[in-house]
Structure formats: structure tokens, C-alpha cells
Length: 281
Image (cartoon, rainbow, N blue to C red):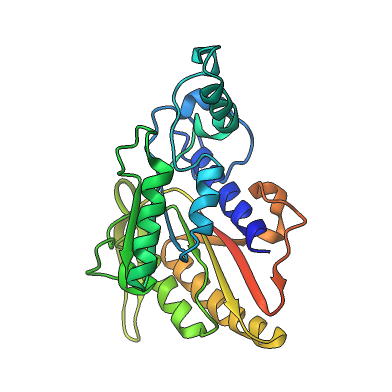
């Protein structure tokens, strides 16, 4: 179950990459088609935030998918006598030529953070990234993401809030810290934002990034209890999406569109994992 959702996470990150195609006339729309990857060679990396445990399962999944490295060489540049290099290049060729991410990981426990840093150093050793593509912070997700936090201004393209337990209000706090309007401000695109209070309605012009945002979360509990908790979290997510002038799509309503396996199970053994894409309106 966990491995299948890690694969979904990687697929959605690739879709984020394709949606950032600066040569596209409509880069705000999620794209899973295999467009000419040469258009994406000079794009900046995708910023992703996730929670991970001491086993580094999600980190390893990103690396296995070729998303923590960037290989700019064509397979034609491989030396025939370098079999190990050639095999590695073939393994990562499909995705890394056009897509890679900067990973930001949070965990509350010092020992786990140390293990994750060691894992990151090991996985990224010798790939030319300079060690700057993997960041770990010993904090819960809300603390790491909230205003005043170290990562408050990073415009993350994708979030995976896994291992959060079953307390819905805590996950809602994470969602609200992640999807703040300040985080997604940009000088490139202006949007008219309307704020309504009990007595007045004020319209201001705010610049917002025009790319989709992926967010997934896992919750635990009894079968019925999990569904009730999901409803609470999704209600908060939809409110935040509206503030960012985005439409909230449930990935499993149309998994093929988002490049996700249609056989992906949403719930198993009292654990539920949901994925959403927030597309600009």
C-alpha cells in the first residue's frame, strides 16, 4: 500500500515538471503526456515537501524514480566500456532528463533526522548535485512550514503529509501552513483577490504562482472514522484552494489524467491516503 502511494507521489511530481514547461501556452494545466523533454532542460527544479521515517522509504522512492538527480547527458554520450554507468543511465533516462526535485523533509526526532541526512548523503553522493538537493529539518510539518519557519517562503509544488497519525485538526494545521497565500506570491502573474468581512468587501491585486500544486495526506483510524476525518481535511483544503484561486481535483476521480495507476487503492487496514491537485482557475 505504501509503495503504491510512493509511486503515485513520483508520478504526480513528474506531472508537476511537465506543467512547468515554459514553452507551453497553458502551463497552469496538469499534463501527463510525454511532450518534447528538450523544452524542459533549462527549467528550475520542482520543490517537494514530505515527511519520512527512519527507513527513508519515500526518499528512496524518489531516488529510485530518478527524481533526486539530474542527468543532462544523452544516452549517446555513454562510453560503451562503462557498463555500470550505462546501466545507471538507462535506468534513469526516461524521467531525469526533464525532471528533478529539491527535497525538503521533516521529522520531529533527532535520531531519525540524522538517519535521513546520512541516507541523503549516500544516495546523492557522486551525482553532481553538490549535496544541495536534499534538506532535512527536525520539526513537525506545521512548524517547518508555518510563517516564521525556515521554509516559509519556499513555493512547494508538491506535498506528501504521510505518517501524520489520526488527529484531523493537526493535519488541517499542516495544510493551512503549506497553502498560505504568502508562499505562492509571485511577481509574474497578477490575480484579483476579494476578501469579505462582516461589513466590507475589499478587492486587492495579489501575484500568485500559476502552476498546479499537489498535496497528499495519510490518516489512520477506524473505517468510518477515517472517512469522517478525510471530509474535515478536504473541507479545509478546498477553502485554501479557493483563496489561492485554484480548483481542487481528487486524483482518484480521474487517475489516468494525472498519470496515476487506476488500480491505486485509497484505503487499506484503517489507513487512508488521498491525493489532490490544485489547478489555477
